[in-house]
Figure 1 (cartoon, rainbow, N blue to C red):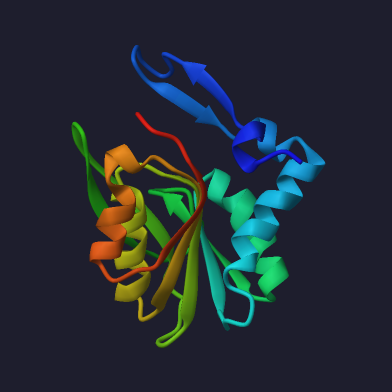
Figure 2 (cartoon, rainbow, N blue to C red):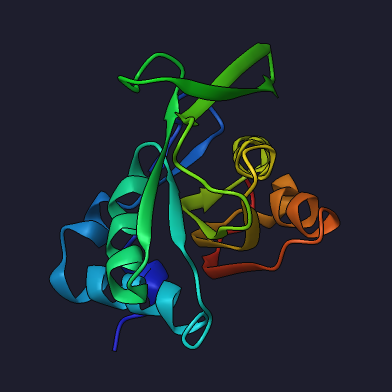
Length: 176
């Protein structure tokens, strides 16, 4: 039986020299791999009640939508600035060189809503931290964060755990 990491393709020197890009399109494209990933993300949360699963653009949409379906929860797309068609609230966050912004619709979260945050990968944790702050500023409670891949050398898991958020990942890869 294949492990989750066996479905993930590693592309060296992308997007720049020295980076090992972890490509989940091979996982998503394999029926058994995709089902195993979704089941793995759901399994840890069986019995918990979530009002919403929030997925971070773009691969978090694919995984988060499937997880929301399995948990019988609504889905919140966390999008890059300017991509949502209605009134939004946003959260800026730091990049290596500059800032970026993510947004959700103003009415995506109601006060007290319980939310599970999902994405394909946790690296430095900057985008996930911004998503947590955004959802909580809107009145929701992010109860947990789930990822297919953790890159522990980049510190994202520790960053989210320092915020008091439980973090689940299905596999980890050392390095960048």
